[in-house]
Image 1 (cartoon, rainbow, N blue to C red):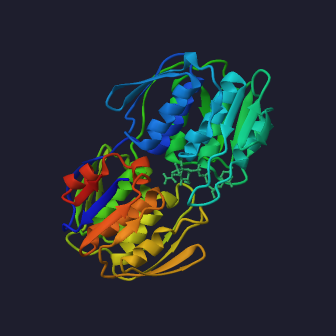
Image 2: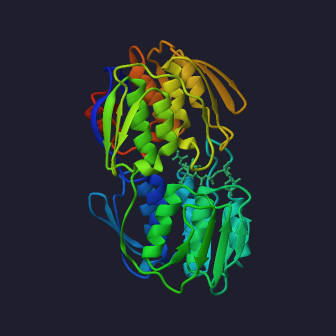
Image 3: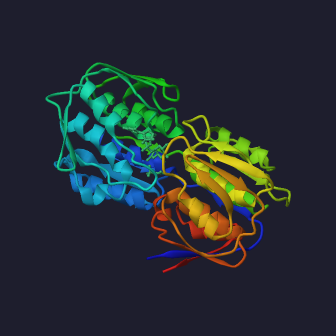
Length: 419
Ligand SMILES: CC(=O)N[C@H]1[C@@H](OP(=O)(O)OP(=O)(O)OC[C@H]2O[C@@H](n3ccc(=O)[nH]c3=O)[C@H](O)[C@@H]2O)O[C@H](CO)[C@@H](O)[C@@H]1O
Ligand SMILES: C=C(OP(=O)(O)O)C(=O)O
């Protein structure tokens, strides 16, 4: 099993090119099921979850090929299987997003319930309830969600009890081919939801309100294949910026989407970073200074993203001052804290809040990555710890960070993959 070995090498410096967003690429790959002809998706990151999604589409019968680096072609016309099996679904929560497209296009879908995930229970009741409101018969049998509809799904008004990103995306994809108007209230406003809506509209869908909490979707009879470029990854961008801030560095992120990152950039400025931004780049300069501790409270977009919470914990551990970090989205998303403590962090964790005393002198240790962003947090801690840090179970990291060791090396970090 691969591991990462990290040794401190001073402040990060230089430029890093940001990849396409995992959380936009995955729903857009699933949306290709809705098309009548070939979809070409560009700026697709080379990630484990992308491979899993391509495998899933192949399993359904689609013809999937990588045309050149980052461009995937999907010909969905040959789909003749409607089952997303446990073996694929267990490794990737996002596979639940095959449910809406398969049901809308083929009237049937059997999707294994995604396996238990480290960061919380993550039920899918909102996905199921929304499809039922659209007329589908949905049951859960032997660990599979079995959904059926005779003819087309029917437009419906769906009030989401909680803001759910993939729930909104699943229902939006289903509604795109439904008969009539669907209104999704309390919809997620995340930029990746907007990217998916833009892609669906380019395919011929009629979706209004993306980026607000009310989506109005007029169903259409068919969607065509198109070429679509996936948006830049705001979480990957944020991770490199936090790593630079923690090391007192100065970096530029290229091919980024600064307009999607207000909450994170504000917190970095509060931490003492000077931030400059252009249409597709962000520059961070700590002026050689150590960061200041910042309070964080996660919430749905446009507030501070839960997917950046762990990285800011690593920053706060070495920053000047005391900080409070509160996680409101997932009930078990502090598993990086015990690992940080093993490296010398001073953190009190109670319920969904941790109190972090800064300026800890971290020392390298063998630590275990428990989930994707927890892994990123440990890499950042390794960059500022004395001695050698070994991060184990980096298959989590490979779900969400393209070539992390190469990108880190490009910024002057000493990060090596051990096979
Ligand atoms: C592939 C993808 O895009 N993943 C992102 C997506 O995950 P994901 O879409 O799974 O997260 P949700 O937005 O659905 O989860 C938000 C909250 O709603 C709850 N919930 C959700 C659905 C449901 O049917 N019932 C229910 O109770 C969840 O348990 C959680 O407490 O948004 C999260 C929150 O920004 C991010 O951390 C993930 O990176
Ligand atoms: C939690 C995440 O992803 P997923 O929803 O794919 O597990 C993440 O990207 O941080």
